[in-house]
Image (cartoon, rainbow, N blue to C red; front, side):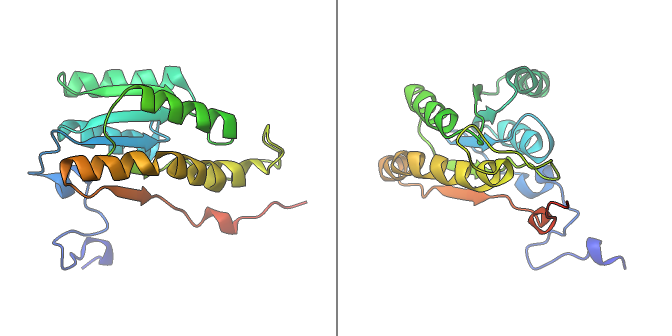
Length: 179
């Protein structure tokens, strides 16, 4: 048997899909914020959460790409609740603006999925003078989490449902710049 298909104690394997893992879950009444939601894992996470009834807020660097993903999700789930907000995690001011705009929506926050990331880019500094990849993959998410943590705590106290913060990671940090 191919090891990737071997199911663990949960009944799922590394090749299980998000739809399989969430089958039968009703996320109605929950709100999730997903960073990097305009492509890849973030887009798929947003799609499946929306299918399960979760109100999804997509944090995206490219608003037009985010709107395209939203449109695709809405075709599959016409009643989905999805908001798309601009978020450039390499910019601390953008992270602060995003948190302000998210709070202005007056939504609860049950789930924060810190998914966005970049890798294999040429060396460059962010507008804040921080190495771009470090600013995007680490500092931006750290600041975002800190800015929204009280909102998550308040949501948990109001509805009695414990919140979750999910950090999506990669081993791409091992790939250093070569000169």
